[in-house]
Length: 367
Image (cartoon, rainbow, N blue to C red; front, side, top):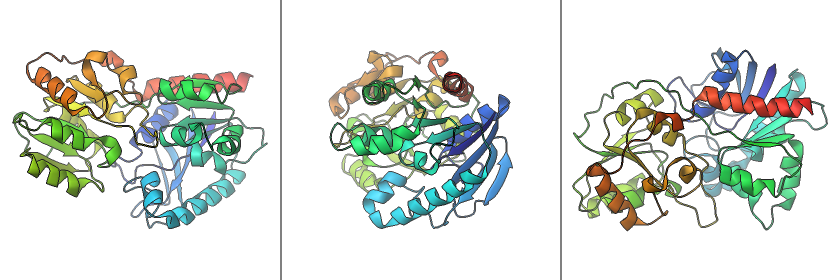
C-alpha cells in the first residue's frame, strides 16, 4: 500500500528530536512493507528531497523556520500571527504535490491543519492523527463547529494519541471510525552523553514552555538537595533559570539532544518527572513521547494527571497538575525507593503504533 502523509513536524537531520515520533512511525510502516511519501515543511540545512528508512520525504516551502519548528507551530503563531503565511504556503504546495501523486491512503498528522492539504472527493481514504493541539482546537464546545466541518469532514477515520481526546471526539464524530494510537518510542539502548552528570538527579525532557510545567518541578525540588537536569530548549529557559536560582535548586540545562542521547541520560537518572499542565484554554498534551522513552528505560516515572499521562501511569505515580506539594512528596518517596519502575510492557513501540494505525486503515478501506 502506498501512503501519502502530510505533517507539520519532521526531523531536520538524523538526530533531531522534533517530529521524531512521526519519523519512527513511518519507518515502522515502511518496515511492514508499505511505501511512504511524506510532505513536511522545509527547514534550514535540510535537503528538499530525501529517501531513507522512513520512505521518501519532500520538504516544501520557505526555510526561514518562522512558523514551524523552534517553539512549535502553535506557539510561533500565537506569538506572531503574521507567520501564518508560511503555513498557507506549505499547505498550498502540499495540495499541489498531492494532486500529482498516486496513493492508496492519505495520512494527516495534526488534522488541524494538515487535512486541509488533501483534495476532497478523490475517492482515496484519509486518516487523521490528532496529537494534542489539534484535538483541543477542534474539540472546544463553543465556536468549533465550523472547524470540525471543515477538517473532520475530510477524514474517513481519526486516530488519537490519548483515550481522553478520543472519548471527547466520539461525541462530535460519531460517523468516524476512531482508534487509540499512542506514538511509540524505539526500545533501544541509549548513547552515553558527553556532558558530565550529577551522581543523582531528576530528569525533565521537553520543550521549555509553560505547558510542560517545569517551573512546578523546580518549586517541588526546593530544599530537597536534588539536582535537576533539563533536556530541551524554549522561550521559558531564562525564567526557569531565574526561578531555580531564587529557590537554590541546582539546575543543569543540556539543550536539545538527539533521541539516542536522551535515552542515555535517562539510564543515569534517579527518576523522570513529566509535570505537564493544562493551559487555561483547556489545551493539554496527548501522550508525551518522553513517557514511552522513560518506560523503555526502566526507571521510576512521575507524571501529572493531564492528557494521556494518567492513562498509562498508575495513580501512585501521578499527581494533580500544578500541585507542587503533592509532587514534592512523591519525589521524596521516589528517593526512598517507594516509587518503583514500571513494566516496560506499558511502553508503546513504533511497530505497535503502526499495527494499530493499519488496523484502523483496514476497517476504513473495507467499508
